[in-house]
Length: 177
Image (cartoon, rainbow, N blue to C red; front, side, top):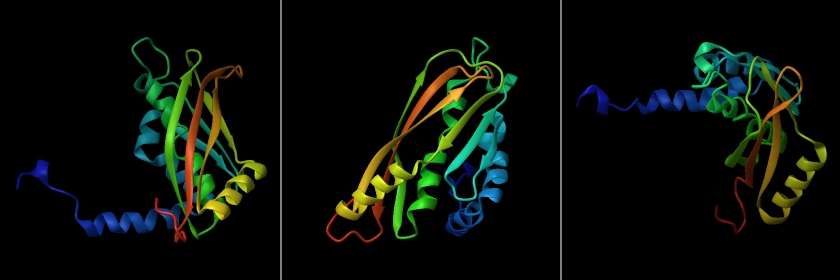
């Protein structure tokens, strides 16, 4: 078998699957670990803050030659990447251990060219979380959309991102996924 067809050993993958949630469970460690995570680090994305209760997070991205597109603005994929895991992680840490949480869908609308340092602030509202948990309690599963805006240094909206997050109980009574 040549090197291109080799798969990582299951034990290595299982180690990472078990380790990441434990390390990422501490918002301080998650903040630093995510900033050093190769896809974020390479795109110039930095996690500025994750609150102790996992209800808010602030992310920024400085413009660098390696995260610019053909016309010299922020690369759209990097804009999307800076928003990717946060809603799922914040919901995961707020619904409790008896639930499965996944990203289900996503949308991004580019509103104007992004230059300089861009930021986005995630805020998980209590009412939205309660509504989600009520639907999960009633139906065994639920999805909800979360939105965040990516802002430039002047406070202008560069892009709007929506993520649909899926939550279900680990052992739903009669539902199948």
